[in-house]
Image (cartoon, rainbow, N blue to C red; front, side):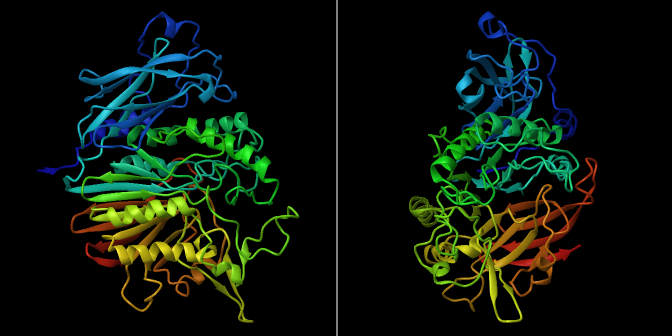
Length: 527
């Protein structure tokens, strides 16, 4: 039997989600213990769902009546919340419910695995505590394992610096009615408030500890358009650097400071990330948190969601003694022997082995490598013949990147695609086997712009053809949409008229098509 994509109630998507609280104001109680002493406004940070499986989905919220306080305005006492999953938005057909405990050690956040659900179905959910109901979220389970699926719509995005734009893009993502939203890193930015190019400012200094990161997440989570996108569909997320610190690599920060001190900061940042996202992952253990995983969508697609920050090696081609002297790393690098050494890694040995296994075993028709940045090798050539690369993306780790490309080829991975973010630009390119570069493409990659973040780089578009990019655009901000079925896929880049306006319009800036069984992209239209 073919599983079809559930039809979304558009009235809900546009009215209730954008309003933010279908059931807000309605009073409920789960007993005197839960309600005793709780202040009003528990659900200021909204709700979210994520990492859908056929029988379950993760439901998230964090109690924060004073969201800009490090403890959210809560005491150290645990709080019991009732959660409910319903087939209808008015909760007249509740199918699953239970009680979850929000504890102070995790910022009074909860991650409920709502199980016993039916595959490939839309559901509504909410939380209740202290006589107060949360906003209502809409989610969806994945199709049954191995089931035929008619189609899948997903939107992918990254890089939503709070200061340099409003979140009009999320308003339009809600209107797309996606089955799934992929977020590919830089959910927050960690820098100190900066008035340059700002339309609004971060509300606390650069965070260095858990209290600071909690306040920074609350700054972002309070945005109604971002909340609306979480309320509209399940998310699957990975992180990049700004969830911790700019351009960090493993245990080294951008300034190559004391690794022990940086790992304490990383531990705080990882905990705050966990506390604020709908993740199926286990809580972090100090500065370690396994984020890489797969997500299956019936027989149609598998997402291999990777982490290219936590386990990566130091940046290549740095002057001798730079780390020992605690000097900032060089972000632009030339050719050096270190750049091409085969042991250098972005993913770490354990994650590479995991990915190799998944790529060899996947039976999905489409395989989407869900990662953080541009994979295509990009280079800037100078008149004197010198070449320069970015040290921080895959161009700085070419052996690690080529191992993935070779694995696609040798494993015969079906219809591989790479999705990325990070570079604050739209890009699209074919991917070829590094051992047979003149052969037909083996895959394609798509980098889906940024929600708000800027890339003032005049050379990006000028060098696009030289760098093998089929499309490059860094003057427009937005997101990518992908529609997949058994025959092929359509990728659309959506660009905002002005990311500095909450009410900005949007338009298609490029469209691409992919044919199942014939790797490589086709440019359908630009502009």
